[in-house]
Image 1 (tube, rainbow, N blue to C red):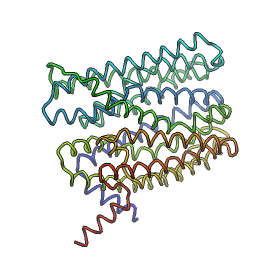
Image 2 (cartoon, helix red, strand yellow):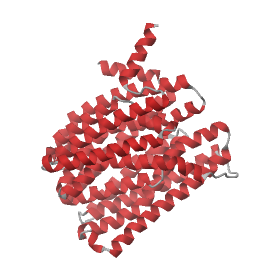
Image 3 (tube, helix red, strand yellow):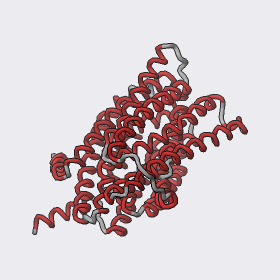
Image 4 (cartoon, rainbow, N blue to C red):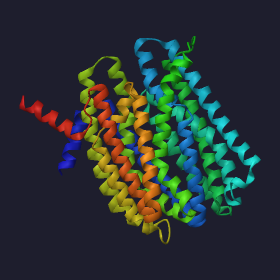
Amino acid sequence: MAVSAVAGATWLRLSTGAAGAALSVFAIRVSAAGLAYGAQVIAARLMGWEGYGIYASLWVWAAMLGHTLTLGLSQGACRFLPVDQARGDIDHARGYLLAGALIALATSVGVALLGLGALGLAPGLLTDSYRTPFLLAACLLPLLTFQDYLEGVARSQNWVVLAILPTYLLRQLVMVSALTTAMLAGAPPRAEVAMACMLLAAALSTALQALVLSARLRRVLPAGPRRFRARHWLRTCLPIALVDLATTAFGFVDVLLLGLLMPPAAVGLYFAATRVQQFMAFVPFAATAATAQRFSAAHARHDRDGLARLVRLQGRATAAATLAAGLAVLAAGPPLLALFGDGFAAGVPVLAVLVLGGVAASVFGPGEDLLTMLGGERLCAAITLAALLLAVLFGLCLIPAFGLLGAAASMAAATVLRAAALAWAARAMHGLATPVWSGVRAVRADAAR
């Protein structure tokens, strides 16, 4: 009851645009997660633990690199474009849009070709069961990268539904439909079939998102001259890319370590638990998608009071909603894991540890968003890299001794330590207190006056 009251009061005090956007993002991500969960259940049941583990490992690598190879220009769009538009510097905004798209495509295609070349020169790097899925994952990489850039551009204009609906809902819908159709048509239940379905889904959703986004951008940024400051953009965005790489690797490091230290069947079991736990992770994602660009815009307007108020209220709402989502995930976890097949219910303890870590981290507030949007990206990168190294160290120590629970515990501990360090850094650099208890004290102080 108390949690619900806090969450309700907080959302009522948030600006209508931010709250509505966050709720829209959350609704889409939950719907998409339902579809993704269905696809994962189908894949796991058809391919078995080992085949599902192969698909999961390669998908994690593709998703991690795809998010990173924009070189930070996706997140940078939320930082640069609102400021340029507020200042009336439209030529600069148009230049950023074109340069960002070209750089994202060039880097992702280059890395994909590098991977294919390495496999051609040394075929023994991968076993036969991994080779064809790897080729398909390499083709998927540029699509994931470009779609990540499109998402950042759409978010910069506060078009959050356009930003995430194609990526997280349409892509999953096509994936589920394609996989189901392939299985009914008699396709073999192997990892390469699932990866091919994902490639098709990414191609269709990216094409549609690009067409719609281009049409909407023409209305707010009409055709005209472009001004480029590529060196300045990259100098600012590369640390953001490092944050993205470290953050994405941080989110997947447990799966990657398990892939190195344990057989594919164990990876599949653990990945299934993370697919259930991901439902609670959509709360901070929704909050970031709705408010990160507003942090940047308020900072550009020198609206210090408005920025501090938004930070405090966003932090309280996110923590309350994360707790509620975590409790719901724990309640629904056993039957959801059982759907994956016999033996997957063993992932319930893993799920509980991951949920505990996510809830504990949420109470430290939006420190990462503040550092990324207001000029502390290098410090954010350093903290995230340090947390990633800790997660690897914890994992190397705990996984051999405790298996899947060791991986979950190492991830939970590193997540909480990272959140605490980011909160400290945001206060030290920008004088903004992000933890939940700081906001509570401020509200009580206001009431006393």
